[in-house]
Amino acid sequence: MLPIIVQAAENFCLHQLRLPSERIANVPQKRTLLAYIDIEADDGTLHRAYIGCDAILIQAITEAFLGEDGSDEQTLIDMLLETTNMIVGSAKVLAEESYERSMSIMTPFFVPSEANEGDPEEIQRLSVENGEMIIALKRL
Image 1: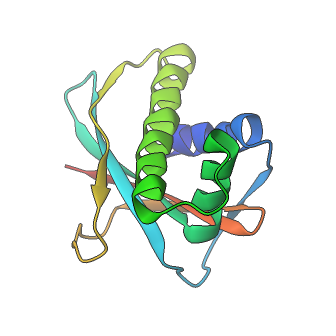
Image 2: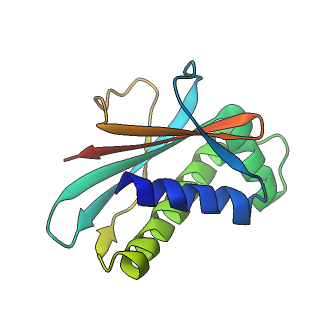
């Protein structure tokens, strides 16, 4: 399932932000805003998909969608939640079209920096211009 979500994230960067992305590995972790959305596959399995963006990238996304170049933290959080919804929603469509696999997605939630979500099983990082996106998946 992670490859589908990563593909949707790459599509989001290319088509919505008009920025290319590159898959990267083993980079030092930056402070990121993190959100998750729960996914139920047609076979009944549950997963939690995480989307995280560093400050540079989430501000670039906010500028692209809202035209704001100096957003407050709540606006950035709201934009992250919407970005998570768009990426995982796109992954849902990709899964249905490409793999004939349906899934239901829930409401996205913001993860406060002090929360401990445990370690996800799969992680992929994307470099987008000067920013970074983290896509992760954990089975529930």
